[in-house]
Image (cartoon, rainbow, N blue to C red; front, side, top):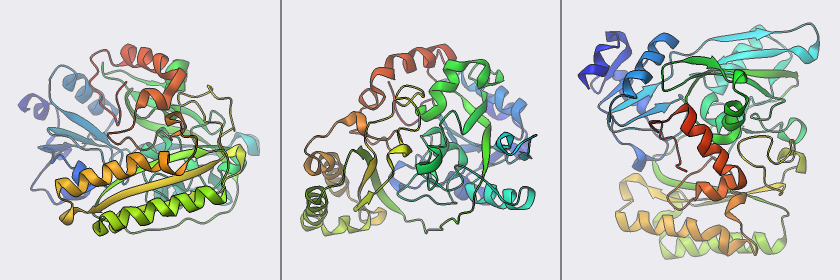
Length: 372
């Protein structure tokens, strides 16, 4: 641990007693907080690359937090990317050439504000992405994009991780090198829906489009919340009835699950998920067109091990009870609870994902949200 501290400046170390510690290590799901010994807040890419290279030679447990409302945590060192807040807008020679370079530590509300200031009349196609049951501006750019990127504009322009929207990614690898992923097409392919297991993204290059829309705000909850989102081909009356039957029975079994149990059925245009060929990105696109989102959990203070186990079991069985034909490969790569199987979610692309992972992170030091 002293070795890692030694390569950081005093300003780049956030101790548990520092007022910034709580805010920059906060998790959405309280039970996933591993209470890191300290936070590393690299000030620039050189510092980040040096930190990753050093961590790669240790057995310290670390993770990376983009800055939104995910649940990334670590027992030893949590890298917080909040210093990576740069933003550039390039209008280009024509309207179709407009793009923005977005720092990995920004939230989407920061991006919206900067777009209004620097590029009135434009928005990024992913400006209100969904990570937890809503497309909200308090989400982090990094986690939401790398996990697929469902937007209010997806019916028209696809997901934010589509090749037509996510043009490139600057990434720091575990060997301490920094590059734009377009120089390694397979790596860029894997990052489109494959999450943050391949390196630490520092900047995104997004296409910008003419549009007008408004975002939403929401309040966080301190709950032991688990989520799953399944892409389904159609929404029937039977599915709706079974979904709310699952919900009602869950609360009858344990009323304390009312804090985190939910059913959200989203009617989408087919183009939202078929905006690219199935294997055009690391996450193979399901053939469905709508989203069935389920959640389960209790307030953190009320979530005993027994209640938590019940919530996990309830959620694990939910989609199977609601859908007559359930395929784990139809789950979005956004939620990875203990019952999710990444090899099924990534399906025929799983082997290639493993191959790319071994190439760019041979020591398997970046844990990410799942393992293959």
